[in-house]
Image 1 (cartoon, rainbow, N blue to C red):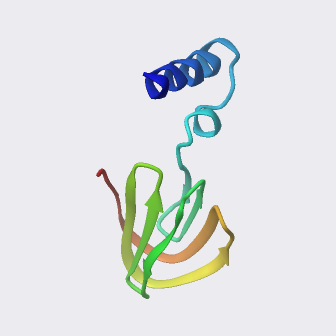
Image 2: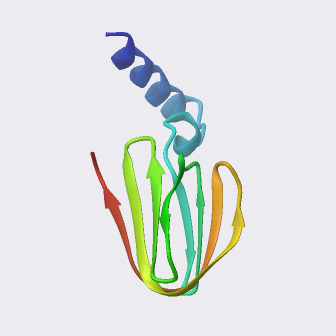
Image 3: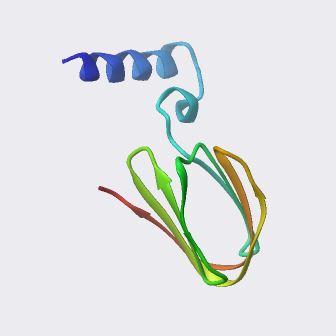
Length: 94
């Protein structure tokens, strides 16, 4: 019951107070520039990385990015900047 109430309050605040949904709902923010650059905020950690694949843990599920020549340019506790040729971005729900 408390979990549903918390979700209701967060949704109400984003709608009525015009607060960003990604902040209030604890969602990832993904910014992609073409096929060469992707910036992900609000992730929960790195699961796997190779030059062809990046897998991140999210609050609900995972984010899988596939491509070629991947290089992590920046990695922080809740942010990551990936460069390379991005072919596919997939959300995997639990």
